[in-house]
Length: 268
Image 1 (cartoon, rainbow, N blue to C red):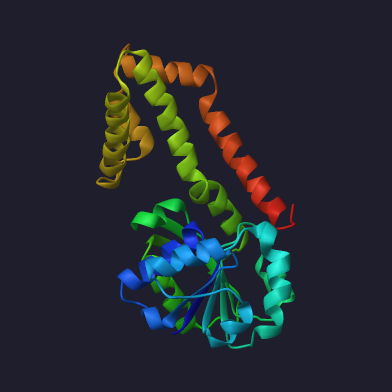
Image 2: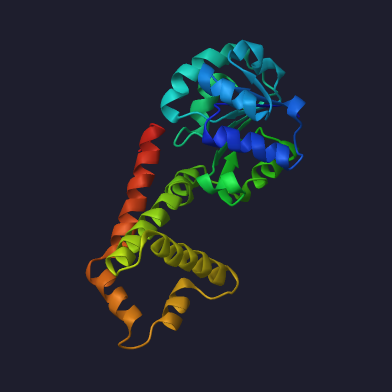
């Protein structure tokens, strides 16, 4: 399968590197279309596939086309590549909010897969939710899932609306985690720890908590109960969070991200 990635940013380059590292694709079968001459030169130095600057030089060569550009850039991109596409090509979009029917109408193709990865894909620890149009065959869907699996875990969702939900939870989610980590590091520094000590205390705490959660069948609530003791330090901290409705704010933030994802796709 010949793969063309349109957009050589973080995710585009991550996909190319992951596909090659996993030996699912060869350098000869990997293509990247990048309009920025500076970024194209940088990609060429990485030797992760053939780099092109014009769509007419590569679109018709691809079996799978991955749209890895910002959703705001989609209208111009669609106009430029529509005349070059043919019906048997599979289009995989990772553009937040841009719906399958929008892509189909704009490009005149029908084999469309929509996915939402996240940034930890860069180290093979990503989380990707994906769905597809009815015209995508089982073999094509499995092939694309195998490609996505090279960057971490995947989940197929039947309803396309769930992709916007995944955008709000796993797509934007790493930033929520880092926001909380940043706050804890600030607290650690206020308690007298230096920068490196604060980073170690917080990062290892997060890493250990996640691994412990994954190693058992216990829920988050059950683990919280195990850490808490009546009148203890953890109870004191959680009491402040409850008083300040921190959980409600986290949910509200995720819902704001969901609303924005729908706005980007032109839906409400």
